Length: 475
Image (cartoon, rainbow, N blue to C red; front, side):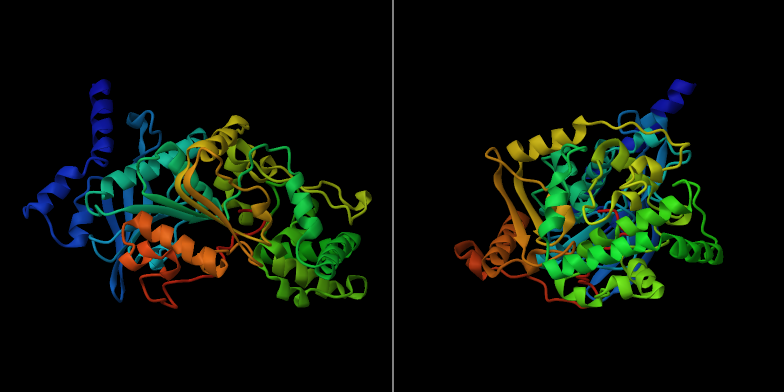
């Protein structure tokens, strides 16, 4: 009886992948024609809500996924996805942030460029897309890529035109890992500001970055405020204790308020360059030694956020820190402008940000495998980085074995760098490649890539171009 039940469960899960028959029935005129009905005819797909948006239909959905793609009979969970539907004849962009999925209609840059549909996926183990009970050993990049593969296979019959994968930061990493494990799914990949930590304990590239980013005046301002926050540790930690008490914050995971305070302060310089521009240096106290405690506190809180390393601030991001400590790696930098006596802990490892009840073991070969694959096998891949973004210090670099794969750097840009921020020639070239991969490049663009531009008109509400901000220090 148990064997029969396991077989039935496995069959139910795999049926979610094989929606071709439903698509064929629709094409023959015997199935549903409304897009909502077509989506809901896919086994394992259920509707959470539909939200109106002019020119589109927008759906928030759940899709049944196996906890373990290698053993699908061992349980399932509901993974949240959204669909911004334009037309089944248009190309589709598959987007992931690598974190939670937003349930507000939005359009990523490649979606505007190709004037297409957009499918957005919540990363496994981010609430509510978390198995219960949570077997954390099933949170790895292959399992997440297999989630994407099943969603793509289920929706390909509904959206048969070309598909592109995209994402920013951890989402750009996710799009790259998906391409590595399922290189035949997508017709192209656009990965924004995606870190590539090949050797976890070799992070000198970050130290070199912080030694030359921006201007000396700006670096000196930031370094001085960071140092001063550690010089004034006692009075500012007293304020931190009051702040925590007023907001009900606790520090059990990281191991105390003192550790949390230093972690926030040491994120300060990194966080500024990740999310700010050189012109924003004017907002940094010019003379940290003479600044008030209030000014130092406010500057650090604005950039780093004193809630970030509380139990409550860390809880949402437990899946990220788990992955950083098991596969992705995490940066470690040095602080030559601060006396050693002022730094008690330094950059703390991801293990310190994950509850001790969750076991972790680092797998050093995982990122090396992905890096080698990108260098030797990347096809139709575009990587975009920001000149002043710390996370671009260790980046993906397609090698001699790659084909039709590129890396561009947006001058003066931060963690929100995109194609629109590239130099004119690179912008038009990148736009032309995206249109070509999506199968919608006009004849004029095929003849002259400099003529390339987005096919859809900019929408101020739909095309949010702000940096995808996660509390530092997270990609």
